Image (cartoon, rainbow, N blue to C red; front, side):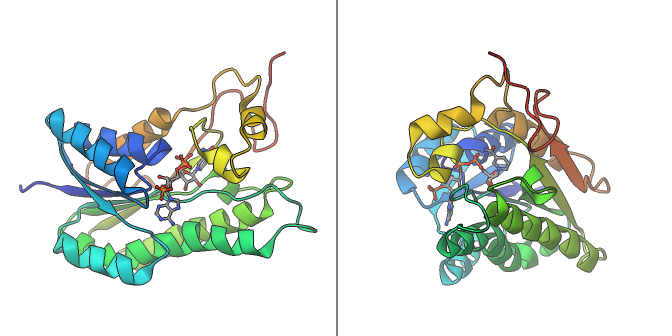
Length: 252
Ligand SMILES: NC(=O)c1ccc[n+]([C@@H]2O[C@H](COP(=O)([O-])OP(=O)(O)OC[C@H]3O[C@@H](n4cnc5c(N)ncnc54)[C@H](OP(=O)(O)O)[C@@H]3O)[C@@H](O)[C@H]2O)c1
């Protein structure tokens, strides 16, 4: 068996970076993509130094032409695609949310996943044993106040994964959805609140142990390394202190 290539989008921070590390440890040749070249280059160099095989490829997943060039660059080599790039912008009620935020969330979470999946599906099928991972969110399964734009985008991404699984059932490609709840990553809430560190910090205040990026990477690593015939359709993963999107136990 030749080296198996895993592509991870949004590998410059949080869940994507942890997933790249995990898949490298599982023996995959990992291709890290994100817009910030310096960060993925640094991580790829670290993985190569520690005996792994990694490559950094700067990419904006919302740019379809660039995604197609990336697919050509891969030369038909792709066994695993982890659609992780995404995020939330704002926490505003439906009545006052900025349509530009809604559009941007749809672009990165939904169309980004669509672009990569369409471009790499031929390679995944040709591999004879491909896996598409879609990192959605518990926001893709239930609403919360102020979250509608993100909730709508993540619901759409969830439906993309479900529909794709129906459509390619005859192909040797699995479709795995990972839906995390509260994950304390460095940037997710900072991005949501446009750099307002105090507001971002409040999201996790008093929560004993929010999930870490490594916890989510662990579930991705586990799901991807099941035997080929085992398709983990959906994993909903939350910290113990979170019973639903809005029911969170906070201490103090
Ligand atoms: N943190 C949570 O609580 C949580 C919970 C459930 C689901 N999720 C989902 O998990 C995924 C990762 O979240 P995270 O917490 O790890 O967030 P994060 O640290 O903010 O990471 C987001 C990643 O997406 C990349 N990205 C954003 N826009 C992009 C674009 N247009 N093209 C390419 N890459 C882009 C970012 O890299 P660049 O800026 O360098 O491009 C970054 O690497 C997201 O899909 C998020 O919605 C997060």
